[in-house]
Image (cartoon, rainbow, N blue to C red; front, side):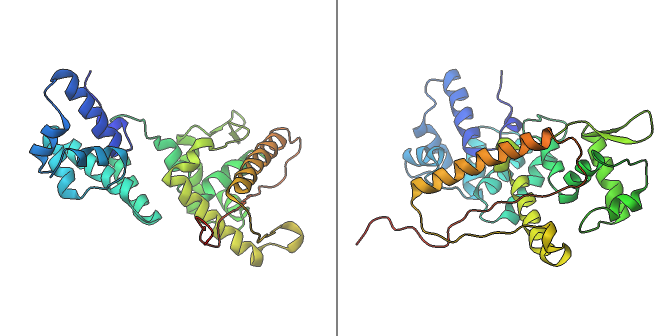
Length: 277
């Protein structure tokens, strides 16, 4: 069965799979053959690409697409994968990720469009949580004003529509909306570009909460300290365990009456010395 390029989100994996597929059909197909037909100076350059030790230009991407005889639509997808994988900024990643999702319409669904759309707006999850603790029968103005900061009526309608489409809320026989899952956690999806943007947006919400929320209803704490790589690993693991405990508490909550956002941030404020002088 031929490889479906739309199943992949890493262009290096695409090249590796394409190579292995061609090699099984033709024993003479080799790195040297690729170098010759793609215009590389040496066969080792393709090895460096696969290993991630070098990036490629759009001209090189087109040359490789020609070697592997990709169709025009596959070439466009491959080019956007290259741009996405090599993007330096979050905004660039968002740009190319949206193109990738668009090109996947009607094709493979390995790149989870549901997860991507859910985390494109911070208030989608907030509305979902709110529908789990308050009766909502179509009063979008009240729903919009229940969030902090408040959203527009149009945004409230949009959120409910998206959540319904994704199967995360539904209208019960009573006419009220109900949440279908108790708690959503992203797990490994924190590595996705959509989740990164969601985190950035919620950090902006945290900053604004100093002005919007009374001190007794918010909690911000900071630590500045010097630690080793091993101690950083311990902190990361402890925060992961804490997140799991908080989720278990939320699952068992008997009378929730509000929606909270919890952000914990750990990041370096200095470069890392590789060795003492």
